Image 1: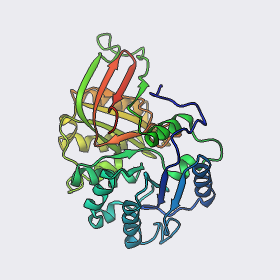
Image 2: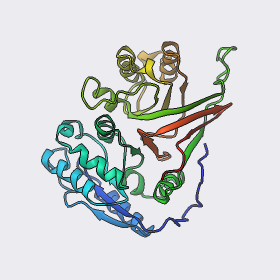
Image 3: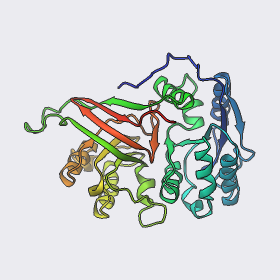
Image 4: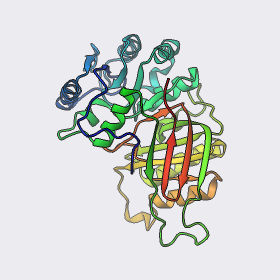
Length: 326
């Protein structure tokens, strides 16, 4: 795996930025990780503003629905360089109708980058569907910056690139051909897609929006997917829903990130995640690329959801390029 413009570890030369921390989904239970994340971002020289209800709790949520909606709207009004979620979990789909999308899009136009993943996928896709504005699939405060050790260097480098405004793309290495791969398709053929919309996120969250006003109508896109705690058959079932709904056939490429924290059973008898990938490749004409470094893992890149990108593959090197931001 490689990443364009990797700064040296610890080289935070992008200047102080205003970061706004808020909780639109599940309640923060790990207060120590939350505090570590804030301290670490402050140590990097940033002004960290914590939303007044960031640590609110209402059953499993970070405050009731009205509280979390207000937090989103305060984040949009903050003028921050980055609005960063404290954590994912669950809670955004139920408040999507109450979000003031014009206010969010206005904040994005003024330079606020909304960053997050997991449950945050619902917000990101709703914003894209309703306004066309781009957000960033990337880290969350507690899980990524609040780790007990040092944050992952690649994640940190990508985050620094976003803050500095010079991140132009990200690349990774595709897996080596398997010994059992068909002789006529040992490796992914060279390809170069131009001007495609990058979109996606958590597979469960994305699929849960099908048939709603919050599901983006993207044709000719590059769709990236990841998930956690989902057995391969559940992943296949979700992909099947996207397939039968006609979503997958309309994409130029499907990128599979990390699918983690599931347990195979004796009943599977050889059925595994690779079985799902092999099946998917028989169902759609678009290339299915794996090993994208994104998901519920420490090493994650930042991806602009809704941006126009190019996608290149040369032998085992894959590159998503979105160019300099103006």
